[in-house]
Structures are given as C-alpha cells and as structure tokens.
Length: 359
Image (cartoon, rainbow, N blue to C red; front, side, top):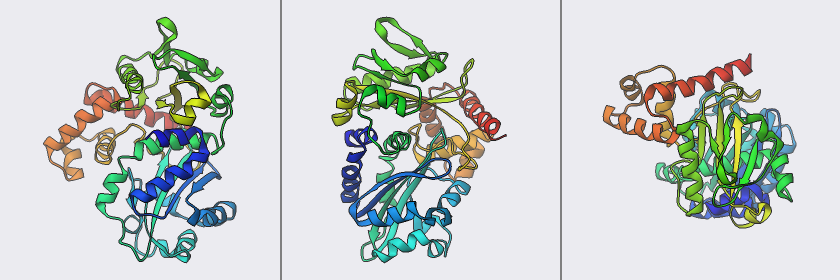
C-alpha cells in the first residue's frame, strides 16, 4: 500500500508497483493508462507492453477502440475479466487487443476508474495464452487494491504521471484544493484553491482543519489518526454533500510514505475533488471505488440511489435481505451517513450536480 501511494506522487515508482502486482497475480504484463476528457495523458507499464502502450496512445488506436466507451455504457465496480465482461467477438475486433495477442498475451483482468473530476484511469493485468486465465478468486484479491489504486490513479492523472519537485509546485500542479498535514493533523502548507472551498473546511485550534459536516468529519479525523498510528482507516475518501457555495465533493486523505514523504516533508496529503460530469464519460459512475465500497456494496448503493427500496434492491441484486442490511450498514459507515434516506439524499445531490454540468 505504501508503494502505491508513493507512486501517486513519484511516478517513476509506478513501474515497481505494477511489476509487484504482476508477480502477485502471475501477470508479466501490467499497465496503467490515464486519460483526461479528450486524450491520453500518460501511461506506465511493465517492459513487455511498453512499446504496445506507446503505439496505442500516440496513434489513433485509442480513438478506434470501443473498450472505454463500452465500460461507460455497461459500468461495473472493481476489476473484471475482459473475456467475461465484453460480449462475444468484441475483443476480436479491437486493434489494441491484437497488439497484445501479437505478444502472446490473452487473458486480461482490468478496471476502468472514472474519477469525479472527469479523468479516467485504466489498470490492466495480462497473462500469456499458455497460462491459466484469471479466475473469480483473482478478481476478489485484486479488488482489495482497487480503492488504493483509484486514489493514486487520480493524482497520477492530475500530474500527468510527472513528478513535482517541491511541495508548493505539487500542490499547484495537482490543480485541486489541497493541503499537506503533519502526523498530528496540523496544516503545513496549502494551495490557493483551498480558499475557494472554505465552506467545506473549518479551522481548528493548533493549526488543524476539519470538515464542516459532522458525519464526514468523523471519517476525516479517523483517516488522519489512522495514518498517524499506521493503521487502516474505515475509509480514505469521504463524500460530502453540497454546502453553501460548494458542489458535492470527495475529500481524499492520502498517506505520504517513502519518497513521497521526502517530496512534501509531511505525513498526510488532503485533496478535494468536486464531482462533475465529463465530456469523455457520458454518465460518470459515482461509486468507482473512491468511497472504498466493495463491488456488492457499490451496486446496492447505486440501486438505492435510483429510488428502490432495500428489499427491491436486494431482490434485483440476487442477495438475501439480511445480507443487504449488512451491506447497507457498511455503506452508511463508509459514507458518513446515518440512515438510508440521508445516503440517498447525498447520492441524489451528486446526481443532480452531474446533470447540471451536462446541461
């Protein structure tokens, strides 16, 4: 986990992270590709697919591929096995997939993460055709890394997979309201964009900050304390509903470890991303792992946001009502809400913001 968050701010470390994931899952080819609304903005990978990714991103092949568009039309949460996810014949018609086959690769496990600000990050692991294909157990294990990869991918996309040399430069280049804190939660530095979302944050004693909303702030403080004590928090990305002049926002609490700590001279990076629609993503997926929801939890939350009762949502998902109640309890805890109606109101407020931006 430390290596993943380190790579978010020290992009040359992505190669080690991707190689490590490949070793864990028997995949000699692992890729990270980042896009903004209209174009590829960077990629990192293991050596086997470096040339293929460069050709894909620098030519028109990425425009010809329908894989991203399909993932937006048929959204899913977490990693999927490509051969199971896409319809029959779909991959055979994809030029990018043919580049992989020419390298002897076949089975793919991947995820497309649509960020609240419109960026899109893709992670793909690939195995040779001579090896066993990815399994459901592999997907379950990969999903343990999903929210961490999603958060780090957000920073990677914003930085264009380039390293920022100083704290001030990094905070400005990120282009998001941001601050760095020490282990006790005291603000060491912030950028000017943070002033624009001041209704979201409130100043506390001893130079500390808090979220204005009580529920999300409890998760915010827990995340900071967890970093100080080297523990794993309930959630590192906290959804906050609209407040005064601010749009619905996700506040990310990211530990600064290893070389990333050296860049910032701090222990915690806090960034805020407003949830907006993307020209590249027709219907931005709200629950893309940034809230640390498991895939089953995210799908249930999406059904509830559509106005379905918990009972109907459970039937639709093919799960028992008692299991749905357990999922709902975890969803409420992770989103800082206290009851189902409050959760739905939060998700609806984000949905309304997306519609407004689209119009």
